[in-house]
Amino acid sequence: MPRDESDSSDDDSTYTTTNVMLGYASKNPTDDTFSQLGGFATWPSPSVPPSADLATCKTCNKLMCLLLQLNGDLPERFEGHERRLYIFACKSKACRKKAGSVRALRGTRILRSSPKKQREEKEQAKRVLMNRASNIGDSVFGPNLSSTGTSAEAFSSTSSTAQNPFVAVLQQDLDKPVNDACHPPLTNPFAPRSNALHSPFTPALPQSANPVEPTPADSLSELLPFTFAEKARISSPPPESPPNTPWPPESSLPRPYPFYHLDADYESLDPTPPSPPRAKTDMMMEDGTNGPMDDKEAYESAIDKTFQRFADRLAQNAEQVLRYEFGGAPLLYSKSDPVGKLLSSASPHESRDQGVLRLAERGIFGIPNCRNCGKPRVFELQLVPHAIAALEEDESGLDGMDWGTIIMGVCSADCGARGVMVGDWGWMEEWVGVQWEEDGKPGKA
Image (cartoon, rainbow, N blue to C red; front, side, top):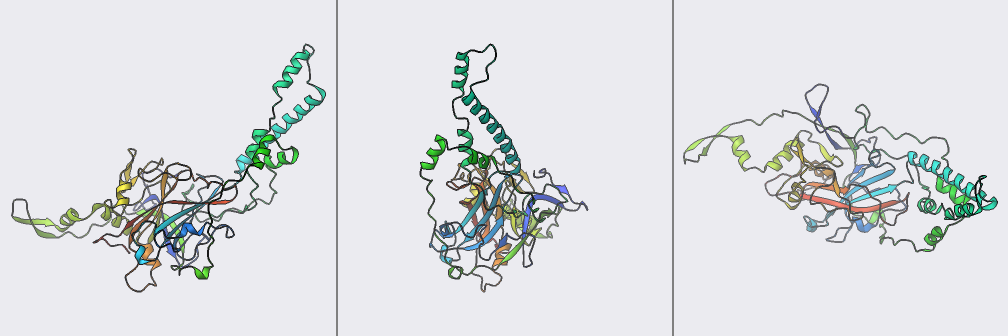
């Protein structure tokens, strides 16, 4: 569970630590072997990538370049789920500030079941098999009648249990094919730490050397004949799959941005950041006379306070490229643009922490619900301007990306794609909100 909203002090009581995990671009490898900034996208199942249409600009219909890919596993929240997140952007100058020039994807693979669930299903399967063996004995030798029982009671008892007790169990379990691609999962370094002393980059523990015992579906399917329900399922056509456009060879893809590994650490803030030097300046007073006014007061009367909070917050950890907090709230670049207006219309259950709007996990008002399952979407991450400085370090000129922040909202239930079998990767496009640079506001850091 995330820590309490009140920030906990570090050992030296000088800085406070928030629930936000920050990402930093690094040329050196980190323990997170999947997450990256820039470079070519890599897929958890290379033989079955998402459709290339999902990474195509909706304005020019050309493939876009990867900005971010992230290991999004949250085992304490979504047990048995593997999650991967991607953000793509079009490099074409003509497409900037147009809808569909930045897109976000979520890949989810729901494994057969968690170890705890497998144990429960195994016990259930044992009970079902024992009940079936008892029913078979009754059907062959007749019910075990007591000395006071009658033949009418025997027939009435038999008819009341004549229905197939395995239809529901088989239908539920046999719809789930065995996951033949199990492997030790990677670790999401941006997931909340369950123990403050536990490093977020600790590699996943290796799987036990003991062989995995068959699950109930395996046992039942080997011992029992098909039921009517199973036959109906087998004879029905499979669900339609979404169109899948293949990816061209890597040599045909647009030139990627430079590749960086990602390092992560919790956000630390100075509770009393130094104030800018204050000087006096002559300003026209309300009575028409000139009078002294602090530069800071004059500046704050004209500056966008939302942007100032954004800039001040980032300045405390100036090299951050990514802010991550599933179910948290974004740090807004502006409240006057469409995205800012959308996200600043908060739910009634809102609070504020260090100048950042925090919302209940039932969703952020204004962000459309998940198109796949209809559940609310929540904030998960945002890219901030220093990412531009890193990605465009080799670019000549100043004609580069011009966004202030890119915000990604995802399904709060981490639903799987429709028509995708258990154990396979499914891909969904998620909500992305881009706050573009505004005149008079700096973007790149």
